Each structure stands twice: as C-alpha cells, then as structure tokens.
Image 1 (cartoon, one colour):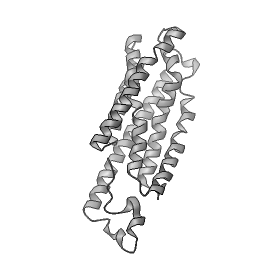
Image 2 (cartoon, rainbow, N blue to C red):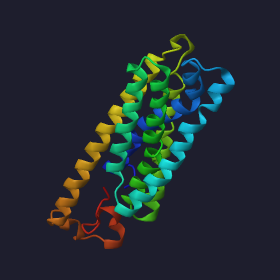
Image 3 (spheres, rainbow, N blue to C red):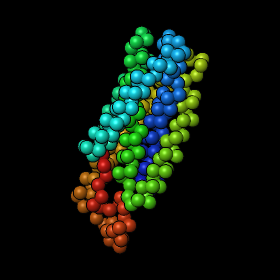
Image 4 (cartoon, rainbow, N blue to C red):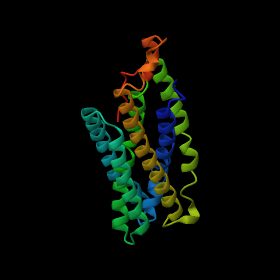
Amino acid sequence: MAILNINTILMSINFFLILVPIYSYSLFLPSIIAGLGYKRITAQLFTVPPNFLAFLVVLLASWISDRIKMRGPLMAAGLTLAAIGYIMQLAAKTPGVRYGGTFFVAAGIFPCSPLVLAWLSNNLAPHYVKATGLGFIVAVGNCGAFVATFTYLSEDAPLYTTGHAINIGAIGLSLCVTLGNIAYIRWENAARASGKRDHRLQGSRENELGYRHPAFRYTL
C-alpha cells in the first residue's frame, strides 16, 4: 500500500530531483563563490547570508503550508525561484548578479525538502503505511547525492556551466512532477467526492483501507 501508491512513487522521484541541487549547492557553494573572484576565507563568509535566508524561508514556508493546508503549490513556487537563481548564474556576467542568484537558489530549493516529505506524510494512512512510505522516499531521495557529487567539477571552473545546467534541469523536471502530482490529486479527490471509489467499501474493513478509503482526501 505504501510503495505502490502513485503519490509515493511521484514524490520519491521528486525528492530525488530536489536533493540533486540541494546537495550540490551545499557542497559546492564556496567553490561557486570563489569562482566569482572572492578569496577562500571571504568565499566561506559569503556562504552565510544565502544559507541564513534559506533557514528563514524554510520556517516561513513550513508555517504557511500548515496554515493553508497545501504543500504542492508552495513547492512549485520554490522551484520557480530556484530556477531563476540558476538562470542568473548562467546568464549574468557580473559577480554581484551571480551572487544574488545564490539567494534565489537557497530560498527556493531548501523549503522543498521538508514540504515534499510532509506532503507524502499527509497522503498516506494508516500509520504503518505512512512509516513505510516515508522510509522509502528518504532512501530513494538521498540517491540524489550520487549525482550531486559530480555536478561541479574543477575543470568547469570558474563558470561551472555544466553544474548549473544539471541543477536547472533537475529543478525543471521536479516542477513538472510537482504539477503532475497536483493534477493527479485534484482528479482523484474529485473522483472520490463523486462516489466513484465507493465500491472499495464492499467486502472490506473500513479501518484497513487507509488512504484508499473513499472518504480520505489527498492534500494538495
């Protein structure tokens, strides 16, 4: 019930795509900033502001998503911000603009990690199915680290065009998966509201249906 859930499959793929830019950003941000012309110690210090902004945005996005009871639309907004940041990295010629792009990346991509985990948690039931699904998504998602370690290579310095292109590609795919997941949830919730899933109640114990129960509504 956990692994064969469409939400589990889509969100696990999504978490993998999200963790590619998160890991590569975390690992290589000092190198990216050094490529803008800053020295080693200065480059390390320049990593603090975008990461601190990411910390604040994660808290804000988590609070807002709980208040409006939505995860996917906030993820789509964050992915769009992150894409803008990487476009700035690829297109801008001046170090200041490219450094500004790191703020967009941090503020956009970091909130997506807790949001997608909470999104899956909201859409699985009962508790043992939820626990299994969350373990699965973490296992699949963390494989994104394998890709991330090969995104920013020394021979690509100082522009790191290949690394930025890989990350913007992962973000674009993640946005497509997110929007597709939202569309599926809207369709499935509408089917349940119209009674098209009521046949599941026949010959089944209602407390064993979990997220498959016709009265269960997926969270957007």
